[in-house]
Length: 120
Image (cartoon, rainbow, N blue to C red; front, side, top):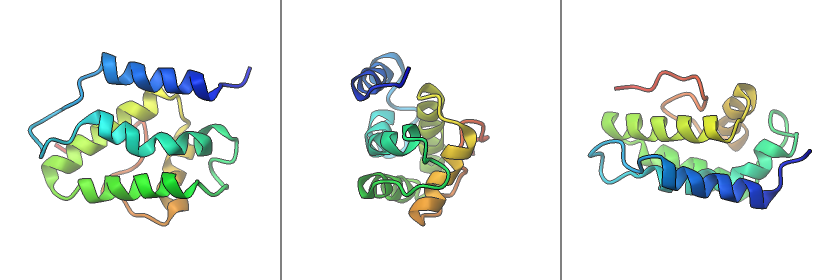
């Protein structure tokens, strides 16, 4: 059975409610802002074209925002942990997750993966 967008929206809302939204004192970076940035990527992750397809422009804009947020060691660790949590909870494959920044042409200061060891 295919996951529906309303179901994924419910999962994302549950992420906001069940998990801490701020991992550190890092310039007020909150996990719900990270999840919001990658929310447009759900289509890319779930469409079956994840490794080879092109993500939507809004998805790449969100990934670019993550790159800008991870501007120092503390922020990088916070963004990494939030991304890792979001990827795990959305049950995205490692290959698809790792492909996203590359498909957007964006370099992140950490691996976009559910299995990455985040700095700090």
